[in-house]
Length: 203
View 1 (cartoon, one colour):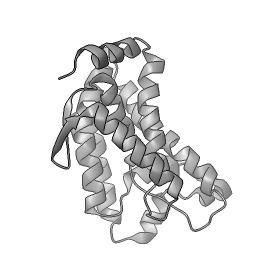
View 2: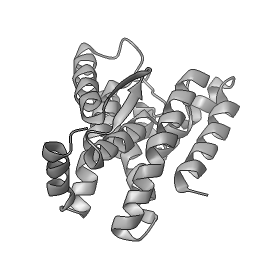
View 3: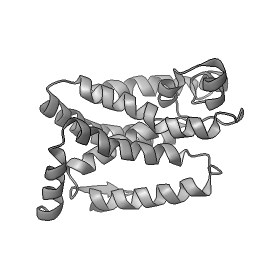
View 4: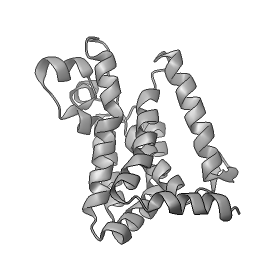
């Protein structure tokens, strides 16, 4: 079994069991105030195991299924260990929520859930390896790099508008940036490879 599939199964099991249990969802959510007051740092990880509903869960896990398999395989070839992919995913959960923590640590009412930050990291790592790979975005085919620019633009715009939608766009943005920087830090040769793919391998 791949690590991606194991993460998907665990996330689905925990998410589904908390759908109708708001108390349990609160216990696992990213609640910056509780992290600050009660030192509940585990929330950086557990918030990625719970989702609002089946649509929220399905979108994240389907995305992870399609993109995670490739990144897991690529990391295994590069680093000869599955631990890099696991560390990548877990760090993405934490780092994508750090700005949210500092922004809302004094707000008792704010909390957020979902694996979107880590999933964004996986998607953008994929773009780093395959910028011109055509992917389906709501059934519209487009190169991955084009989707990346659209996604970042939308995320930055929505993050500046605030959190009225209930979606943590800050986590999406920082997860995406982490997905690009993590592979480059551990294997700088990916940078020239990305540029070669970008300039000479348009499909």
